[in-house]
Image (tube, rainbow over all chains, first blue to last red; front, side):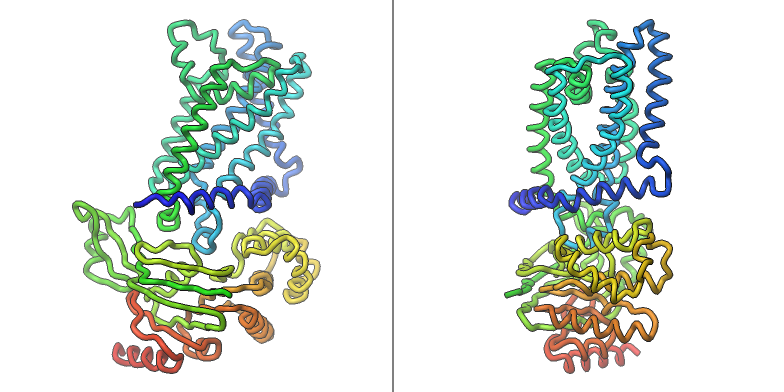
Length: 264
Length: 253
C-alpha cells in the first residue's frame, strides 16, 4: 500500500483544528460516565486519593521513609502514570470504538485521537486536587522549577498523541494488541520507579531505568510538581522519542489511514 | 458548483477472522459481492463489493440507486461520502457531503435533547452558529417542548425519531446522500416528515438516493442506476432503469 502523506497530514491538521468537536466529545465522555452521581468525576479522584494515601502511609512505614517525602513522590508519580496508562489503553480502542461514526461520516480521524487524549488530560487535572492536598500537608516547595510542569505536560501530550495514533491503527487491525498493552502496562507500573525511587534500585540496575521511556515521561511532569528540575537526560530522551515517534506515526498513518474504515 | 465523480471505482473488503470452514462455505454460495482469495497462499479472503463503477454527477442531478440487498448500494453511498477510499479507481468529491444513513450520528441516550442537537449537528457538519440558528426550527418540528431538556433515553421511540429526523433534516446540504429515504414515525408525522425531506432535497445541489422502492425513486430522482453484484448493470432515465429492474425481478421469480 502506497503511503499518502498529503491526506494524512491534512487529516492531522484538520483534526487538531476541530478542537470544538474533540473538546466537546472529551467533556461529554466524562459527563456520561458520571451522570446521576453526586460528585461526578471526583469519584475517580476520591478512590485514587484513598489508594494513594493508604499505600503511601503503609509503604513509607515499611520502607522506613519519611511520609512527608514519600507521599508527594508517590502521589505525583502515580497520577501521571494513571494518565499515561489510561490514555494508552483507551487509545487502543480509539478507532474501533467509533465504528458507527467512521462508517457513516467523513471526518479527520485524528479528531478522535485528540478526544481520547483531551479526556485524560481533564481527568488528570481533576486528580491533581489530591496532589494539592498532599503537597500542602507535606510542604512541597513551589519554585521556578515548578513552572517546568508546563513544558513537561506539553511533551507528555505530544507523546500521548503519537502513541495513540500508532496503537489505534495497529489495534484496529489486530485486536489482541489491546490485551497485550494492558498486560504490559500493568507490569511496567511495577518496574518503573513510581512506588519506589530510582536511587533505591542501586547501581546494578540503573541502566534499566536510564532507558525506560515511561520513567522519563513520568518524571518530566513529576519532578516539577515536586519542585525539582528533571534531569537533562530526561528532557533529551523524551524529546528524542517525541521526534522519532511522530515520524513513525506519520509514516504509519499515511500508509494505513484509509484502511481504517475497512478494518473496523 | 458541487460535483461528484467516480472513475472505475472498485472496492474490496478484507474479511478477517473467518474460519477455514466458514470460508469454504462462502465460496459455495455467493450472494452479494464476489468473494475471492488474495495473498501468497490465498489466505486473505476479500469480498468485491463494487467493481468498476463510474459516475459523474453535477448540480441538479438526483440519482436513484436501485438493486437487491447486497447489490452494493450502501457501499456505493459510503464511497460517495468518502468513508471508504476505493481499492482501485478514483473519487473526486467537490462540495460538502451530507450523508444521512442513520438520522442521528453521535446520539447518546444519556445526553439531553439539546445536547444531542449540538453533538449531532456538529457531526453533520454544522457550525455552532448554524446549530443555534436551526435549534428553534428543530424544537418546533420535533414538538418535544420541555422534553428537550431531559435525557433522550426517557423518550419514546416516536419522540426519538422526531428528534433525530428534525436534526438530520435541518442541514443545508450540497451533496446529499440518503439511504432508503428517512424513516418516519406515525401517519401524521409521516406527512410532515415528507414535506421536510422534500424541502431538504430541494436545498441540495446533488442527491444520491439508495432504495428498493421504485415509487420513492420515481418521485425523487431524475436519473437512475441499477446495481447487481457490485456492478452497474443499467443506467439512464428513471423509467428505463426501473423497467430493467422489474424484468430482472421477473426472471428470478
